[in-house]
Amino acid sequence: MQKSTKKNKKNILVIDDDEMILGVLGIVLQEFGYEVRLLDDARIALDLIKRSPPDLILLDIIMPKKDGTELLNEIRKINPHSKIPIILISGSYKIKEIAKEYNTNAYLEKPIDIDKLRSVIENHFA
Amino acid sequence: MKNITNNNSAYLLETIFKKIPVGITVENKKGFITHANKSAAEIFGYNSEQELIGENIKHIFGNYKIIDDNGIRISLRDRPASKIFAGLEEVSEVLHFIDKKNGTDKWLLVRASAVKISKNKTPLAVKSFKDITPTIEEQKRRELFLGVVSHELKNPLASIKAYTQLLLRKEDIKNDSNINKYLTNIDSQTDRLTQIINDYLDLTRLTNGKFELNIRKFNPDDTIDKTIADFLLTTKTHHITRTGKIGINTIGDEDRIIQVIINLLSNAVEHSHKGNIINVKSEKDRNFIYISVLDYGVGIPKKYQNEIFKLFRTIPKQTGKKSSGLGMGLYISQAIIKSHGGEIILNSKVNKGAEFIVKLPKK
Image 1 (cartoon, chains in turn purple, red):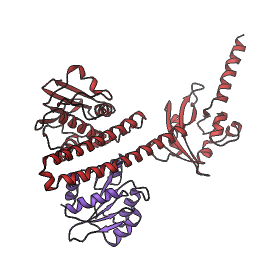
Image 2 (image 1 turned 30 degrees about the horizontal axis):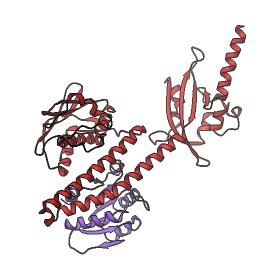
Image 3 (image 1 turned 90 degrees about the vertical axis):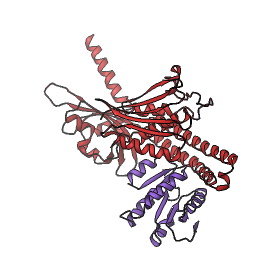
Image 4 (image 1 turned 90 degrees about the horizontal axis):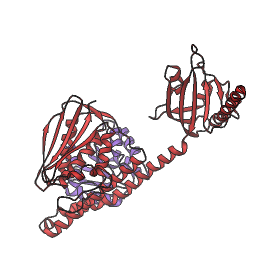
């Protein structure tokens, strides 16, 4: 499933295997004024990131078809200076360890509080 | 008579050595196996103990890739027996043995002890090997299960919370006080459910003995400040003031300490009136650092002050309704602080408020 909206604003890519989460995050981020792309399959994410790099990525770290940590490593390879900020989201308690291990910019635990989400994203774009 | 008794003892010990379902070998300083039992032969893939006796451990070691508890591959010198020859009396470790030939693996609890046969000679290393693979695999299964359950429960909750918050931001809903109130209740019940799930997961890990601390250096003052800032993003009903300073770094599991502070702040919010002040204070003395959370709420009667740290114990909220958690928060917080070598102390007077002090040894 891929959706995109056309606006001349910062572009956020959301990768999560749960369609409901994608749906609601899509609405929330649009309300915040961002252009949003939603992906429920990490396997096509790399290709998309190479072709059309987003300004920020929200990545669910535990996904059945392709593990989020694998994807994180691969994104790091094509994006070595971590120019695209990656925010990890997850329901797993392991997320803190994973975030530290991968030295990623931030993480948010599910259920995500909208105000927290907004503030974390704004801090990255500040 | 004495001879017969000695022979009987010797025979008994020899039989125990032969039959015990734990692999035992004895190694000399040159690395040769001088004694071995049947279980040891089985563990290391030898047809009999006779084949194992006389082998050099370099040869046996070379058949495996051996990894320690921290995931680091060990060399010959890192073996428990090598540590015995380096001077230690006893070494006990869980090691992961991966067979280089066929890729099969097992987890062994390895214990090595020094045994001095005669005063001047170097000791022998007696090693025991217990196969604990089923236990380790069960632990890993449980970890996986916890991870999956956590993920599956949190996704629907995340959707509910996000949609509720989206609704709460809409003008016409903000203006309708009833709808606003009902949605706010749904939102806070979602938080409550999340907290219960998190507490339950912690509790399960605590009882499985899998409560690991991620020990790192951190600055407690910075930790407190960012925890308060984060807490205020989602809790707007109380003022939080900050006093004191610790001024030094310490070591511990920073995320777990944050969990404790959040637990204390949540309790303070729950047990004091809206608009009240909650004070977070930090200080140190010669041996300890202190982080305390003080509220001016209903306080805790003396008879409950020890009770509330127990599992599933709650006391009535300030509104008189039952406390919203399952009563696991303080139990888990106390477990976290105790595993750091510290404790949580409570000072409280009814209707005056409560102060929970986290006392941690200086490190």
